[in-house]
Amino acid sequence: MSHDSGRGLRLLCSTDFFWGSDICDSVSYLVRSGCEGVLISTEPPHYFPSILHRERVRALRDLIKDLGVTAAVRSPETDVNIFSSNPYISEASQRSIEDSISLSLYLNADFSVIRPSNTPISVNYGILLSKLQKILAGIGKDAYIALELIGGSYEDIPRIRERRLGLIYVDGRSPLGLLRSDRLVGISIYFQESQPLRVIPGVRASTPYLLLYPSRRRMYKAEDFRRIVIKVKNWREGF
Image (cartoon, rainbow, N blue to C red; front, side):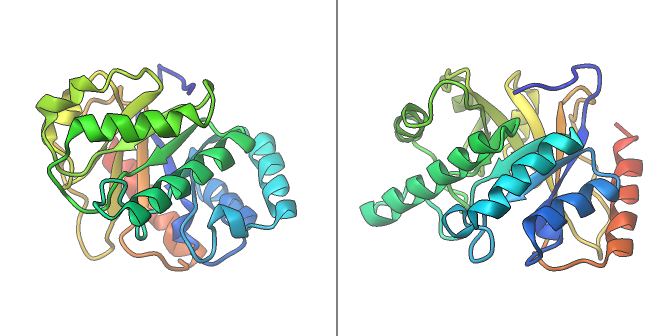
């Protein structure tokens, strides 16, 4: 993963703001609206990698190259839990994550974002590391993964020593201590139009990325989304 170390909290916006639209159109909308990078969703049913048409994927790769912005590919949240005691769920979750990382590599994206589970649980880091090693073994040495950790405790995080893994703090759902980690590469926030943006204590302005998602996936009007981007950028200036 590469980034300009002199420019922290670069705003990366999710294609989930234009849920259901053509993936290339979504990326173009985000950049035209003032986003400094893009987060490409792989959520079913619209954007699951195996159902994306090859021509659209090639067009997306060319578009990302032409735009010259930071790009990340995010694995699905829906029905994913690699810690599941049901081996069918665990194995299917792992495959969906691997597919999203493969898409990221094909697109020459800067990094992949994965959330191993969407449910706060007490994580056994031995199991987590074992699962992640299996994923990393299948994708080659050039992939960089930013890991969203929900729940758990900060004290166990230093056990993750794999240098191809960074960490992302999810506002309101990750342990606050994660903000102090030297592995922190981003902060995820879920924008809610009816609520003010929260103060996040301990945020460092040098953190590379600010990842912006809608609280609910839907098709936003372009002018409404531009207002959101302006609001988030103004909020960012407070760090």
